[in-house]
Image (cartoon, rainbow, N blue to C red; front, side, top):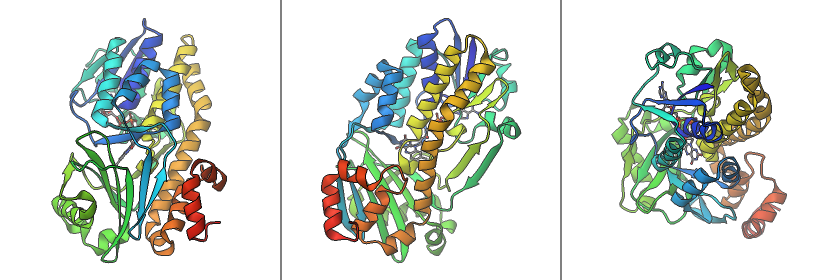
Length: 384
Ligand SMILES: Cc1cc2nc3c(=O)[nH]c(=O)nc-3n(C[C@H](O)[C@H](O)[C@H](O)COP(=O)(O)OP(=O)(O)OC[C@H]3O[C@@H](n4cnc5c(N)ncnc54)[C@H](O)[C@@H]3O)c2cc1C
């Protein structure tokens, strides 16, 4: 079997290594537009249940990732300048995105996956140039702006809309003690900082504001440097003298990408190319890697019947994926109304609403997993 994977991000590399580990006789090629030492963003979080799934799929890469992660046992949520601490009773942590890719790449190369760096594909016609036109399967693991998805958009039934909040993904040399979410009202605007340390030198810092704030503060007309300076001013107490660092940190409205069908002939989508997961659930990477694992299982079981394998991937994996994507949707809808929640709720009510926003955590689970938090919330607010 010949498998071509377009995109050497987490989903593409993970798929490559899972396939070659279990079917060494297959030919697996990953095509990546960037060089090995380049990526977007800074650090990402890989949390509990997702990690367990990765362990079940491949112990070696799981162990290698665990060695590079920085673990946290608490998160702080700040609303109306009141910090509320949440003890996290879970195994999970943060890792530099580049390190994550290096680990996966190392494991993939050990398994003899062929990785073509610095090769951008504009359409499947370009596979000819690389001598890969005869692939049995072509996987679009090429992220939010997937060219494979665009080429077959009608067959995939692609829809794309945009949220209205504005965000940018920065880093900072301030190494935060605990991950935090700071919701700050500043001169009438509603601003959010999502931050966490992912190494001994660096933290991720995602800056966000709602659309009304964006326009009222003239952010639309500002340069990127001016926007960055504004956020540095608003979150100066947290940054404690450090600035924000840009890595092509463009301001965006989050694109919501969905596909009615996952497969078109020999082409199949996984990860963000298939369905973009909002950063506020901190799970896009593991959702993408779980797609890779499900596709690997389906292809390895299909005994050469690619059409059956791809169909099995979609029908078996769609229910699990739908649950996670629904959680992402409920989370971003909550953030879209952030000004309303910041105005309406006391800090305790706010934390309760935040924790239950995706519908995956109910009050019973909160009581079981976060007893100290729930005692505080019960004592201080309408939360019973
Ligand atoms: C601000 C922000 C914070 C986030 N934080 C987290 C977090 O804490 N935890 C988490 O789990 N997730 C997080 N995510 C989400 C996560 O980054 C994505 O869900 C994840 O990277 C998806 O993986 P992927 O492999 O599908 O796509 P990508 O990571 O986008 O990889 C796609 C790859 O394909 C390559 N490529 C694209 N087009 C081509 C082409 N035409 N030819 C060749 N190569 C191509 C790209 O260079 C890239 O390497 C965050 C996202 C954002 C925006």
